[in-house]
Image (cartoon, rainbow, N blue to C red; front, side, top):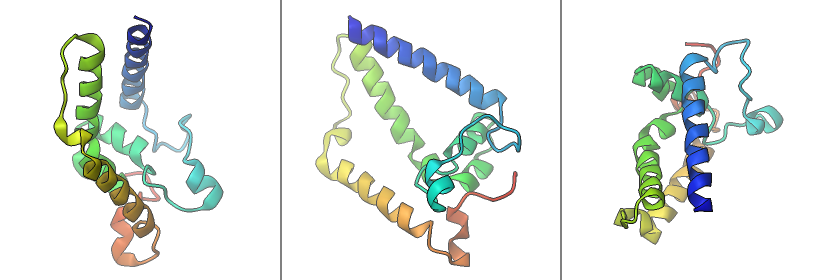
Length: 139
């Protein structure tokens, strides 16, 4: 019962965050959204850099601009959503709703490998890789 209450609380918080990202643009110059600590302190882009702005544009239906901010996040978002749905169904029902792919070790290792490669490649300072980095200006 305690886990269900905690999970319900997290769903409410998540819904609030979705509303926040819908109404406020994290790309605006005077935003209260936190900047990426990796970019701020190390000067490099992490795999999540641009995902706040991508979320805002996805919620407004602008997939093209969202892809400009973080293409990996946009591509993997359906998988992330399926994982969250699986978790929610398991917590709130007595049914075992499982997506077998998510339990495969090769799948988890593959995602980890993709994140690592993306992290490295998006920080290589070559012009033809610029599309992997978030834009410096507001779109």
